[in-house]
Picture 1 (tube, rainbow, N blue to C red):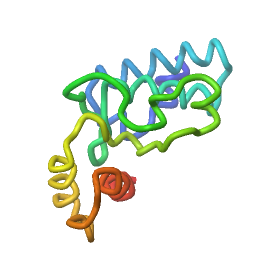
Picture 2 (picture 1 turned 180 degrees about the vertical axis):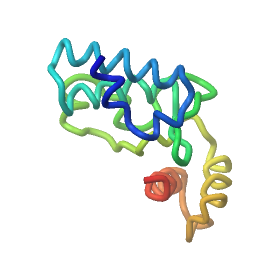
Picture 3 (picture 1 turned 90 degrees about the horizontal axis):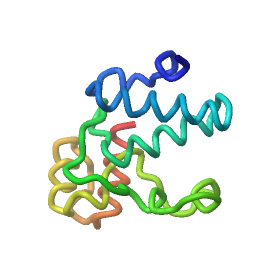
Length: 128
């Protein structure tokens, strides 16, 4: 099972459902596109629909759906990198206040002057 062998560390620390989602999608993508970057991208896109990255693991989102501007795009637009990816931070599923509190816990400098998108970017950088 290729997905099980290439499971990223953040997913190894995540709930079994997150692991199963990533592995199932990855293995299906390998059958369609071959092993490599495209299969990984496809698996993460599927994972981000239901889970978000919080610190060093993936947790279930309150509500399923796109998490960042890039995940709203499909097909060629997504492959071309239209929109911004935020490393698993759920921009659309959180209020600015919730992102602010998370940035505070991560000790993000300058958070009080940031807008919602800037907070999500800063959280992504801290979690990477």
